[in-house]
Length: 326
Ligand SMILES: [Zn+2]
Image 1 (cartoon, rainbow, N blue to C red):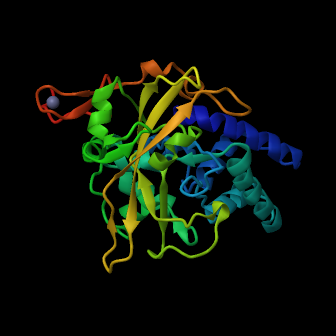
Image 2 (image 1 turned 180 degrees about the vertical axis):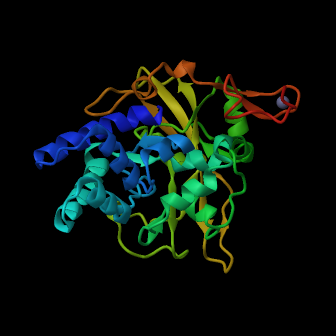
């Protein structure tokens, strides 16, 4: 979804909520405050860099958390609205809460890291995103760009898919390689899937720690958080399943940082199989609802007969094989 379609409702929300507080907010100013919340000096710079945004799933805090630049937001609120220090502090936290709980929105950092479209602006955008630092955790993507974490074994979706091919995955019908999984039935690929597809969460991981050694702190769910980063896509196949009319096998991929050695290094990409049952339930959206179109309209992953690489049919801009272009 284009950034402007996601930012427009956010702008409206800010205007409504500021009005409840007796603060009149012009639409143009609301966009400047949204930009500042994520560290951008102006809304125009978001458009100039083509910064992508995505809704995030607040149930999965690790790696899904938006990173706000509260110092910058507060300064912009003070100067653009002419309110006193106390009020600008209040409004800053109001914006943060609105964009975390009411209309969860974050910059789509994985896309900026992996997509060729950001080759020239990538460094600048990540500098902006991590300008204020964010406590003990940050985005793994930003840490890689800042060279505080090692480079990943691959830097594009096609590269990740190539590395995943020979990895084993358990899809509930025995263990096989990802390549065998793909050749067993039509396989769709969803690049940068919705964070509201729970089965895609490993592929969307983007969490780094400023200290490489993960903390022993107890965290909700009892899982010790790790530095990990997802491949940014999932593979999908229909399952013929007697329990549910429509179900899919979902394969995601994630790298985790091995920090036990003196030189931390990324693991091999790990392929994770999951089953998605399309039961409509309270607050759970179906895949076509999340996609905005039928699953069958996603690109199919195919094997190039010439070079033997995998590619996404009809989406060569995202995943192409190594045949010469043109
Ligand atoms: Zn080829």
